[in-house]
Amino acid sequence: MLFLGHKRTHKKPIGSRFFVRQSALHALRSLSFCLVASFPVYAAGQLEIELSMQEAIARSLNKHPELASFAYRIKSAEGDVSYAAVGQKPELSLVVEDAFGSDEYSKLDNSKATLSISWILDGELSNRRVGKFQAKKTLVDIERDIKRYDIAAKTAHQFLTVIALQDRLAIAIKAQQNMEKALMGISKRVSAGSALVADQLRAEVSVERRNLNIEDITHELKSAKKILASMWGGAYIDFTSVSGSLNISRLPIEFSDLNEAIKTNPRIRYFLTQERLIESEITLAKEESKNRLRFNAGISRYERTEDYGLTFGVSLPLGKSNRNQGRISALTADKGRYLADANATEIQLLTQVFVLYEELKHGHHINDSLENKIIPRLARALEETHKAYQLGKYSYQEWSMVQQELLDAQLALIDARLMALNNTVELERLTGLALLRYSTAL
Image (cartoon, rainbow, N blue to C red; front, top):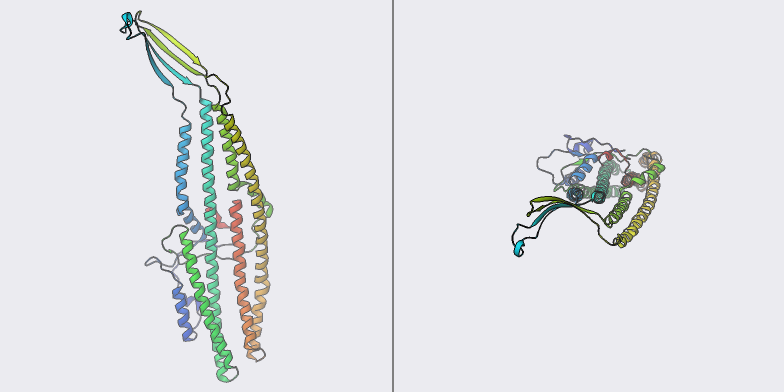
């Protein structure tokens, strides 16, 4: 489980944290060079800052370039909803008859003027249009949710990579320290004539290899930090390290709970919302195809008698109301397609979740074996082999092999934990469940 505090610390220099006592002068120089190289260029005057995963994800969700356009898309969708709610405007008309003709109709004395207003009963049609654009807005919201989950997952994966590299660097430095101590002991034994010069030479080579390993990990860590900072568009790395641990204890959830949560996956909701959008478009097309009554009412003035009269009329379009039948048939086919896509996506997600969960269980099994069985036994074997070497019962090669086995097991433990946590992140992305505490940022 990850530890999540966001800390600002004033730490002692790196050298004083890692060394208990001085070793050989040339090793100190090479190690100091590697440690200095491990720091990328930070903001001027910056203190050492630990970045938590929760803060990293929050930064990505607030500043990731791909999320910026969604605010405009949602605003545009809201505008469409408002526009659809406005029905067809009533029409006002003025008609003058029997004027500007000949003889007694040459002027306005015998004319008739009619002022009228006409309207269509389209309230239900407006409601259908609003429903259509509301479904479109929901699609934009779901697309944003999908993108947010993807960005959060990518940030979490990269954050875990940085933690793993920090752990690898710590192990590499510890191994280098141990090799330096071993070299000092071997050198004394060579001077006393109780060990071969070849042992000292091979130990010196091991020290140099440890130094190269530290340098390799240092460069990887620099790049990993830069990639992490790029998740929120950072121009430079504004943190010195990340906080947290790769330690895992138990499976965070049962498989049955994951299966149930799949139904709320944004990708499935996307297709189901597409289906609802098509349904609203079908309803709208049916509503638009209906013959609608147009009403008009007004008042007429007769100039000859200076009298007034009311007018009222109703008009109805002729012909069958099935002119949208082709459109409705096409939309019905699209509706079936989106429903089929939703079912296919659910099957695919269930398969992915099953595979990830099996890999997660396997990762926990590897972690338990390495942490509780293999590493403790190798540590004891190394101690016993060292004693045997000092007594002349084991060769330097046998002692060195056990050292390497222990180092490999420690690195394998980091890999197993990283794999398990990455699988957990993917399960979160697919199900929306908060399996790690940082997920509250989602």
